[in-house]
Length: 261
Length: 122
Image 1: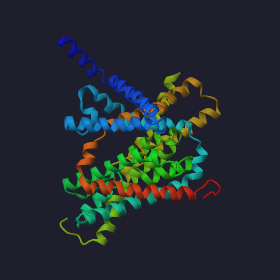
Image 2: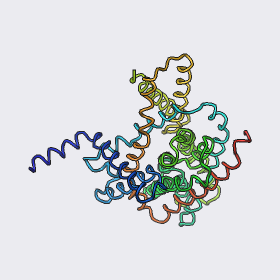
Image 3: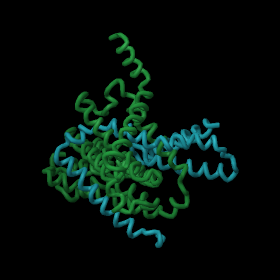
Image 4: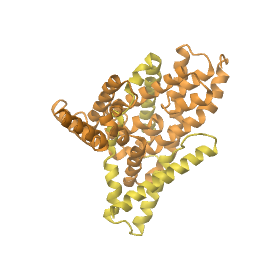
């Protein structure tokens, strides 16, 4: 009996991608059931599935002490592959097959404007919060400010500037909080933001920028709009990594006396 | 054939990522500058070209469609493999630095969307 159990567990580990498909299918089924019975359809099943996913990641992180949520459990390692950068990017690009090219061109300027505004806002507020938390050196302030952009911009900027590992971890944490907040808040606030046209989605993607947050948030709101938001959001992290260690650092250094760096 | 669609999709993503990384490298940056966005433009461009010449049978298109329909499940898998503990471990500074800019950007989204209402073209 024990042998059978362990060989079944081996099978689930060996075929971990299939296990991941099954897990996500079950999560979606549960989400659809909860959406229909507990919220009488008011909360979108995808939003619930995403919230359930985060909850599972929390429990798994607590159990394993790892950084990859349920993917740290050997049996569910396939979830990391299914939800990893490669297949995620493949699916995002695939959504572009339903895009109307002229809409991109017509809203291109709004997309650029929102990118500039979004990066500016996140860096400014992030920097102010770092300052209020007692950080006074330009490197730390810039790194935490970059974390407020995305959890990739933070460590890239911090590494380029040679920030302390504690500050690096803080910037990653800030970016993660941002992603989670966007995932959960977007479906709730979509109506009040009039997030219902391709142009609005491009603006939203450029302002918020956090890829995972924007994509999960919109998936639960209106999947048709995903490619438009993805188009601008995908440039956010790249631009953030570009201006973080250069322009933003210079500005912060002008505004702060350089201490301890 | 379905594989033509999936192969086209994969090629676009690979080319886009290569271009994104090359641009990053050119400006002295060890990161991808908009590779996914470039890949999307490549796919949109090549699809419209193929459609015009009527070289896009339904089977080929379904090789792309399948992946775009898998998008939401993939996002669920992504959220289930996030470092949620890491987000909580950052304490109050991380919570504030993550939350307040989001609130501000949500407000800005509302504002910009209003300003850009479809009647006026920018």
